[in-house]
Image 1 (cartoon, one colour):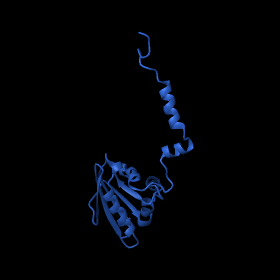
Image 2: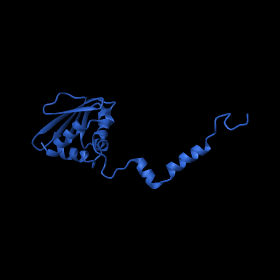
Image 3: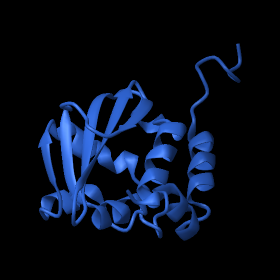
Image 4: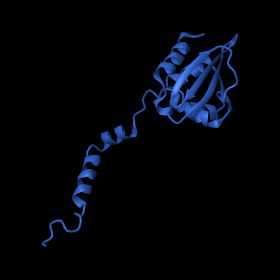
Length: 147
């Protein structure tokens, strides 16, 4: 097995799944090599992740991919859902785990959070909107009125 593949799964088990708090289930990754197939079972229980290697039992979803594609997904070079739609890898089982793959793999190397991009393009938009909202607020009835 590749050291990069082992490192990814070790990191996944140690890092947990902060973005997977609502997820429970199992995903088996069958990684194809020229001479064999390695199986990794990822068990998720409300964001807690456990990983095992070797003969894996049935899982909620089975992902079959070659090692090179898998490594490209781990680095964020290939997004899992579009790769699956192109038939670059196969998935058998519950579709929700195919969608969830986006949370297991790194974002693209040049990805930025939308708020970060908006702040760069329009640096005063957020502060201006907060200021104008507070200036436009109507005081509660009775405040400042002669009594």
